[in-house]
Amino acid sequence: MHDLACPHCEPNPTENELRTGVVRFGFFIRAVDQKRHQRYRCRRCGRTFSSATYSPSFRQKKRHLNGLVMMYYASGVSQRRLAINLRVNRKTIVRKFEFLAKWAELFSKADLNNFAPATDVLIDELETFEHTRLKPLSVLVAIEKGRRILGFTIAQHPARGPKAAFSRVKYGPRRDTRRGAREKLFEELSPHISPHAEVCSDLCPHYGPSIRKFFPEATHKVFKGRKAAVIGQGELKVGGFDPLFDINHTLAMLRANVNRLFRRTWNTTKKAQRLHQHLAIYVLFHNWKLVNPMPNAIIV
Image (tube, rainbow, N blue to C red; front, side, top):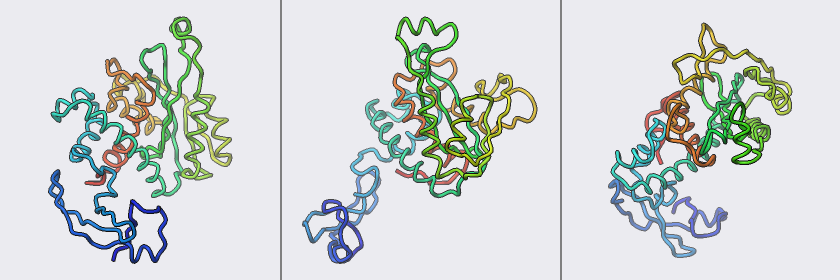
């Protein structure tokens, strides 16, 4: 007997059903990776399942590519080049992208519970666009000191400068959703940030009210932004000690490793949702492989 719940029966079996409901029912060797998996049979419904049933990559034919696809997506490789390198159809890569994005977002949110509430937090945002520079997007990123990414959010806002009038003529008025997205992110992160945390940002006047709303006892420190350096994708700053170095370095890594965020690139984002999915994949890879390397930690 085994304390396994049958995936085909009701989701909340009783203790007695757990003790007497499932028995061993042979095994099989999976053709993809030659791994041995135990099979089970449910005494209540008579249906069978295996130890592989509970895997996130259940029924995938090319599960061995998941780790490679994640690594390449977090290393600035485009979908077309990824399909060529791995010798698979581009539709396979797109399906892997959607699967990995969903899995990575769930894993990252659950992973926040494995750490103590952050006491030193830095926030900043970078700008990109969807489809055309006349439709700008803002990516707000919150990190813990040490460059572990806590969360991010994407919001649209109207074009500024010389492009503003042309944008209104071609695409009409564009809503500014940055405040709502920012407050939603702070609300999600509030259980994972200490009430007495020190939150650092640049001189953007919009951060203060949102920080006071969700972290009324926190200390908000602001620093004047400096001129961008030639290196670091424009995110790193010229000069000596930079109190916002951790967040600026993290944003520079985003620019360097997510091809949708490259400077002077043709790998543009067509939909904000795809950018969100791509960033979810990168955040997981960043936290588990770059900032805090864990060998064989990401297995799907």
